[in-house]
Image 1 (cartoon, one colour):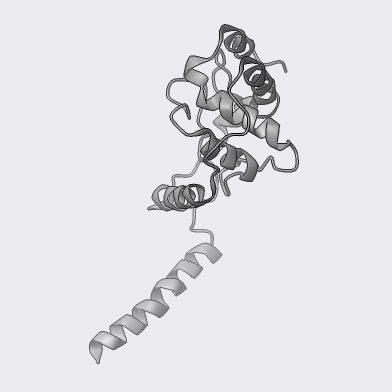
Image 2 (cartoon, one colour):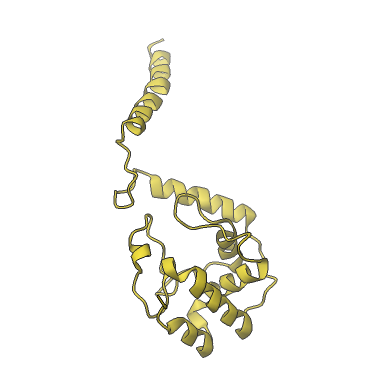
Length: 170
């Protein structure tokens, strides 16, 4: 009986304490605040599960130089403000975000991700990260061009690298 009482109390007490913490502002919500316990792990688990179930396995857009150049221009216009360019450091926007957006063209970015995974993220966005969904703003070909650019970012043709090395215009 005591065990059952403990379980019921736990089922009521834990949610009540969580609600009080949220209601009275004890939960960090500022971008400069530290992450909640298990926040990163739970968010990645959910994202990984969703992407693995829904990401397309094949790209209808090949990684040709013309598509990569188009992807570079789209990236410069829509992605660089958060994810940076080859020659840039983090922008003021990127420095103020939580979680920090990955600098996709610096070091190991998403070049080991399949293009379909990146396409899913571009199309759908990622909740509570600042990553917007571009479905409706960009067409499928444009989203695939960006995805192919990022999937091959470690082995881009010189013309595409040159386009991504130019400093961002203000």
